[in-house]
Length: 488
Image (tube, rainbow, N blue to C red; front, side, top):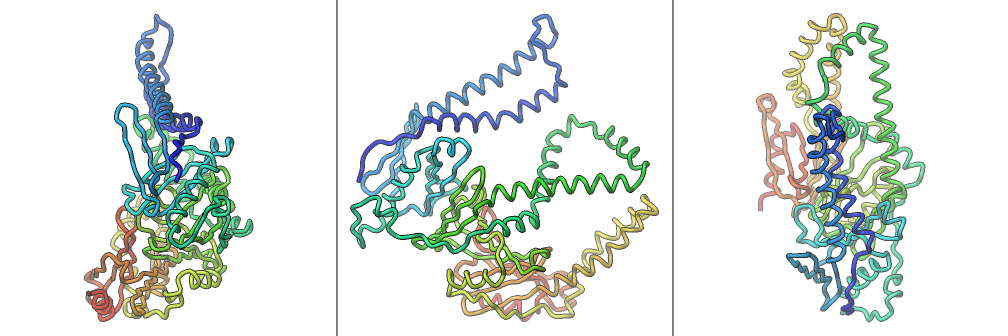
């Protein structure tokens, strides 16, 4: 095995520094706005020393960010020795990390703008012991050929007993990787059109506004909106509609960029996901780390027979580097989805026969909502009369949603498999194996007790707090059956 010392590409210094500078831009903007743009480089101005002080601090931070990027690039080295990937880094405090290749669970690739210009790739090395949602080792920028060598050495270490591999190039290309899913342009457009990302966009805008709460003149804005509202309800509604359309369009574009050329392949008991237009990503997911699978059908997609498949994974960085929830199939026909999953996981029953919530439990799905609806309807009707009377429509709407949720609620036990189906807005079918379930519990409200029904919750390992399936108002006897099934 090669003991040649390898270094990161020099562009990694720029990438690291740019990342640090990017995190400093927002504080600078806040400083400028909170000071009312009262800055001056005129020595005789009252704001001269304040300007020098504030920009001086930011300038020192920027210089340190640039220096840290150069230092990391100059001090970071890696090599292969004794069946291990070894890295060493640090200027004053030298740190070393040795990772046996057989312990490496996945190599995730990421190609940002700088990477694609220079033909580079960022490699994240993950092991079963990766903690705090961070990779074991991150190679900020290396040549694609160097990344292939790492994968070559990993495969050689894992297969040296069974195979004699002398030709490195033939090792990389020896086995074609079968594609099990590729998103077409048509499906990508459907995904973007029906995406629920509009909520993410609006929540992002709200988060930015909350950070500027001290400098935004809310009172003046409220008065302006009140005067604007007097012009007519039509113009107010039109402004709201335009805002929602803009948010939807932003969500549409983000979805197109993130899921462009979305492909799933399987190789050596691992799922390999590649995607992205501006920033290309490759996510590797070992099959043995999958804890549960959710089939999610939002109402629009369900109407046309489409679904989304989400994998709950233990460990690793997850799809966006922040979580353990990975979208396996962003948009797929329900029938095709079940056939593909049957090939990947033949031991799981993907066509369950559910035991549903009893009819007498239907009212428990909407009765509790009236507790918070009554004061809202009362206040709206009184203060916004006569338009506030439209809030009365919330009552039949809540009842219809409750009936809709009740109709979708059920469970199935098949050997060592528990399947839950429930609906908040999207219909979710949650497939779990008994050995993967971390805990099962039941709750019972006053109204449920009168109806002799219970809510069952099952949690699997995923993310910081796990992923919980929640089936409301099952027969009390069925809930006890699930608990007995889970008992050791």
